[in-house]
Image 1: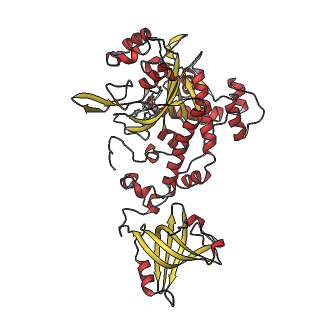
Image 2: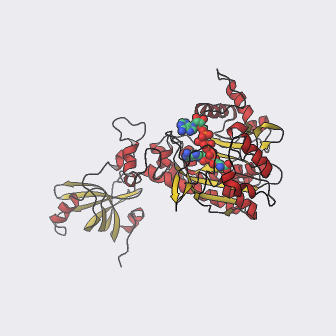
Image 3: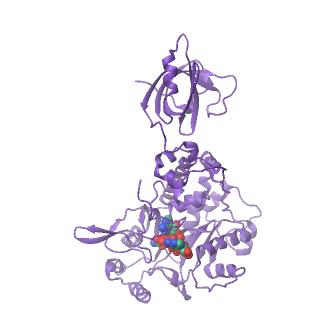
Length: 488
Ligand code: ATP
Ligand code: AMO
């Protein structure tokens, strides 16, 4: 059988050797007796050429010149060291002298758009194709380096979420996605037919992850699809997204959940930093500044959180400390966030009022200015803004033991301690006008001895979008679903 050499492995040490390479034709050019082709395999590329003469028939040169760009070809060639480096390809010190070429799969001669179109910087001059056009042919768009890299980073977000929680003794669960009623207050549900009955697509694994804890799994997580029939035509809402959810039994305080959240995201952010090749490819198209997630000693001194150190630690030290639970991210009570906003807002907000998207962004800016970080948790949210299952604060019923996590002034995670007393749950639902009859099983799951517990949910695409400073969540969704789009 034929041994294929990857484009990435072609270099001057192979000078004079015959190789077989499978790659895409990135470009071709014919000039008299010469034909050139750039062969591309993902981020790697190499120049290949043929010159009509004694050993090379003119037909080969003509044939190369007319292969449509993006076709997949097998090339048999001799590796040849070049004198002057070829700067337009990733393999700079060699070119391939083509002996044979076989088209494995021919591309259309007229492409919907070129890879250069898909890779154009957001701030570039001239005509840009719009993102809808790119999405309509996503398999082409994904070939551009930045788009490809976004999904490599996103995959790591999921991987680190899993790795960290498994290491902390969490069990991965798979809850049903077809359910008999809404699982989340507020957001709309998609209805489906279920053998003559109505069923709904799950808006979150919320009720099931809690019931799993009551089944003594005690520390659980899930990575799975979440469906929301919200007519949300915003830069950060999808109708289907990937939910990263966790739920755990707690002993004394919901801070036990926040400790896991902080350590988990700290772990993830530090680990992501090492994927420099992908981060640079994304940065070349979408300008973004690195996420600042390390709290300075001044902030620690002011807020009285975590350990005290004169020096801001290196990322490795930071990771070690997170594991040792020595350092905490900033946690700011909701009422304090409102107070901070009110220092500059003309129309002052009440401390139990919901914060809209613009003010959320503003809050992010204020916190960055004051504490130097893009990452924070706000806790003790007003009862009126949280679902029925959220535990009220024991010291003040207007607020709840709940929290949101923000990066760059936008929400990536939301969670709470949950009510584990069925009578309190019924009372809360009644006061919020939520009918719990359809989820009687859920209420009953707290009647056989219930662990106090809490957890949180994260949107995978939100994390990727905001970690990478992207302006639209659709860039971080492989085949985005929104009210306007259900194909491809
Ligand atoms: P979640 O729903 O998960 O709590 P979210 O980021 O969607 O997370 P919401 O609490 O739904 O947050 O809303 C937060 C802000 O987002 C609101 O203040 C609102 O201004 C804005 N928002 C939410 N949904 C829409 C929408 N469909 N259209 C415009 N803005 C929206
Ligand atoms: P929430 O509704 O806040 O909480 O969702 C959790 C996280 O999911 C992401 N998210 C979204 N991402 C893309 N498109 C959307 N339409 C969308 N809506 C939400 C956000 C958000 O922080 N059951 C609770 C979680 C819990 O308490 O454990 C819940 O679903 O990143």
